[in-house]
Image (cartoon, rainbow over all chains, first blue to last red; front, side):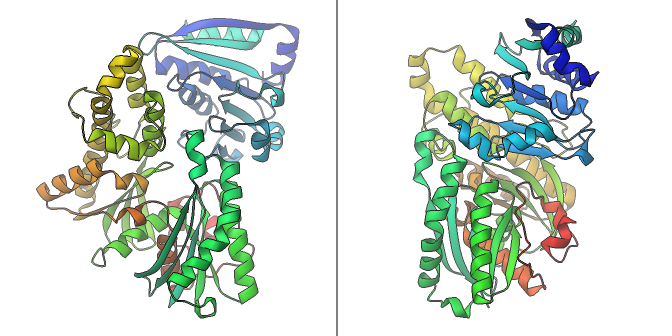
Length: 166
Length: 346
């Protein structure tokens, strides 16, 4: 299924919103997304402080069978989980503290893009250096723990993710 | 024995000289004020600042210690965890100096350095004890079975405690770094003003989570007007701080009981928090526990703790070669039973 993510995005790109009732469901959508991901795929996650970006990415990582705890990379900027810790190598970025695209590239961002599944918090910063076929997830904060996920990607992918909250 | 210790893992450029593992002769910390306007550490700026500040810091550390570079027995340097670019500046510099002067090089794990700050602060502190390492990048409960032998009891599952302070300060728009700002503000606030959630996860476990608390503050603030937030900010800060401190204290005391030890060391930048010190000391006294917290200059990132850990490792035979590389996500548990960093990594 994972090989089709780029073709799917090219064939029928869609943008759709759906609601989750709390962190459990938000993470579950991430877990479902994991089944689609292979090295070379990028997921850009954006939303305000406390929206649940790390939570969503924890869901993806659980889906990728990463046995290690997945924590916020705000301090380290990038946390790497090599292939031995899960099904595929994963790089988890946090661009919160970075001010220009050069400092993202200084982290070796380009090299990670091909080698890993790249999961990027504050992924709406620096669109100029992000791959055009990345899956984009925007988390909007609703009442209490409710969130609205707006997902832009291939039509098949988005329809599949929507099923996670039904 | 004189050891020079260098730490450039984050935003402090630190160099120090320690004699015989326990006596601090100098402890120079050049804080990088440039990050304040950005509301956080900016890695590129940090690397460049380390480059400019490190050699002068080393020179003043040697000078203040009245120590000639020639008389050093070894040079210790942090190889991780930390920001890759920052670690690289420290390690490359120390490699050059060690090679040029023919001095042994000892790579030190930054977290182990925080644990050795306890040894510098209190000569009577002896394993086994519980160490709560709590800072901007780490929140970890460790059973120190012996110097150099660690059992990790729990980590944070999301945000580090210090990171929660920074992010909440940002949500409240009260400045950076969040730890000192909230600590100061809280002295005029009522910690019981708001009842924010305490996340204990598994009540018998020692894992932490601060992301739910951050979200609770965000939700509370979004329901208040700016005038109300401004009026109550000391109370909000104190209530948030109390929620963090409650969990840190409860888990540390429970860890000491579970491990059957009678001392707790709190160390790392957040260990400077006055409320945490006060509450931990109170609880310790009530539970027959000795609570050790190093003075602030040994709690925040510093070179003396790296020199102290390096001295211990040097005495136990550790020598690292020029092939030593930085490990931004180095883990304390990887040190167990390893004579040197090189073996710990394989």
